[in-house]
Amino acid sequence: MARIVVINPNSSASVTHGIDKAVQPLAKNQDFEIVCETLPEGPPAIESQDDCDSVVAPLAQRIESNVDNADAFVIACYSDPGIDRARTVTSKPVLGIAESAMRLALTKGDRFGVISILDVSIPRHLRYVDKLGLTEQLAGDRAVGLGVLELEQAPDAIERMVQTGKDLRDRDGADVLILGCAGMALQREQVEAALGIPVIEPCQGGVTMASRALAS
Image 1 (cartoon, rainbow, N blue to C red):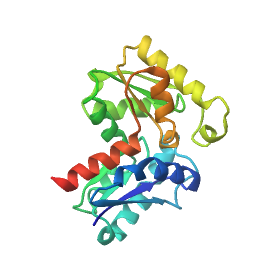
Image 2 (spheres, one colour; image 1 turned 180 degrees about the vertical axis):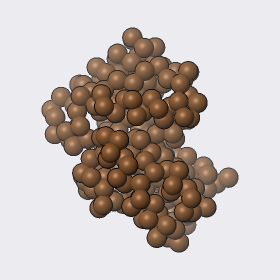
Image 3 (cartoon, rainbow, N blue to C red; image 1 turned 45 degrees about the horizontal axis):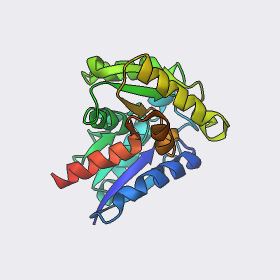
């Protein structure tokens, strides 16, 4: 059976647990298994460019050292940190959840919106969207004003996500939304039900794209 290894580049096991819970249903009755791992060398949360840069080397080392134990890798952070370097250490598929989510979003709508965590994240996201050549398909990127770990604790986290999604839908013209943080992995169904348009959970998107790569 093929193995898809999903690596959470931050060191928070609670985030990895949420990712695992979100993606495991995708393996049901399939010919692959999903293994979710935490990168202990990473910061507790990846929120700044420095955070992203800090995980590039250890992430590549983790993938290179485990290349014989996986058939595909998914980098489970919405900035896809270190993806270019990771692809130099293995010939096996390496997927980033941000790119995967954007590609999948465009199979469900014409213009996607991103629900981000913090305002500081948005310029980084916009640079990546431009690199992927998807700027014209981006309706908007708005932040809920909560850090990665605050998403687990704030009692109004879902309400903030829904309100941000409404702004992206009604003000920016998004017809499909992306949850722009792996820490939102368990909120997709609630947000989608509240907004009435498709919502992509990026960790699920990364696993979906990885399974397609293995099947091709």
